[in-house]
Length: 119
Picture (cartoon, rainbow, N blue to C red):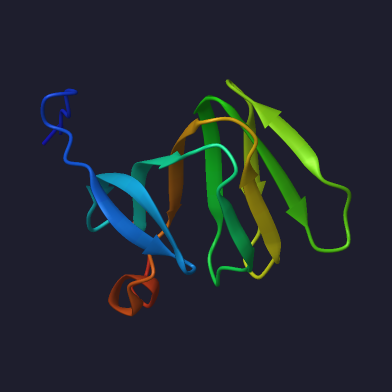
């Protein structure tokens, strides 16, 4: 069944992301081993050095981010830009401006991680 989320349906809440509180709106969590959501980062907010055991892809919808993967130069990603973080890659994310992100990632649920693909 197709799922529709209008701006009226969006439910924003404060969540803890690596010790930093930011606003998030979960869009999708289901049985496909993937989840998505919007995240708001005010100018200057930084998610300290961290890594994920799964892949993460980020679309900067508005604003501007600086992303620095460990051992690499920092990259500035403006509205419309995108970045993909490989599993286990340590990185720091900083909002250069007030920023709205669309984040899509593999879910952290072990029951889905262990399930064989049906495709």
